[in-house]
Image 1 (cartoon, rainbow, N blue to C red):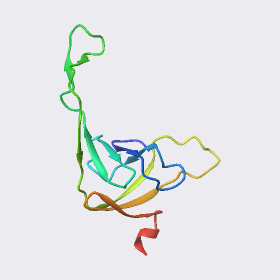
Image 2 (image 1 turned 90 degrees about the horizontal axis):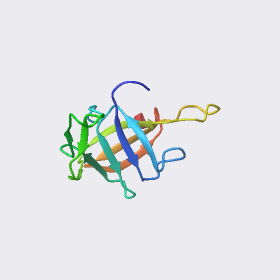
Image 3 (image 1 turned 30 degrees about the vertical axis):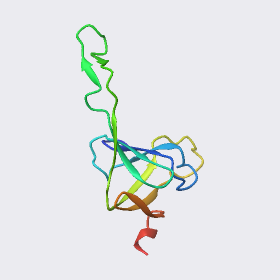
Image 4 (image 1 turned 135 degrees about the horizontal axis):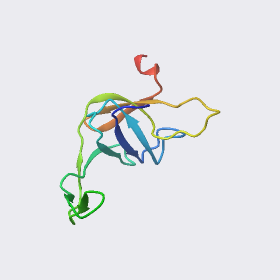
Length: 117
């Protein structure tokens, strides 16, 4: 899907095609942020701000400054829909999963449409 989305680096087994993959969602911040879902189902925000400086000499326009990003818990209580950032299986339907978080930890994993049951 095109547009602005957040990326979740998923290390929690939520089903085939989702484990240890980059997932996209439009249901978190929506500012192209990076998140990490650990093996215990806890959600973290990865912040890379202030890790590069602008440079007129470098062709890319920026250079690393030696600082590292920050990882902090993301205590969301909400339901989000996720899908793989890259899907090459043209013979299979595009997969989606619905993750329900309570205070930043996975509470329930379902497929779209099931969450209303």
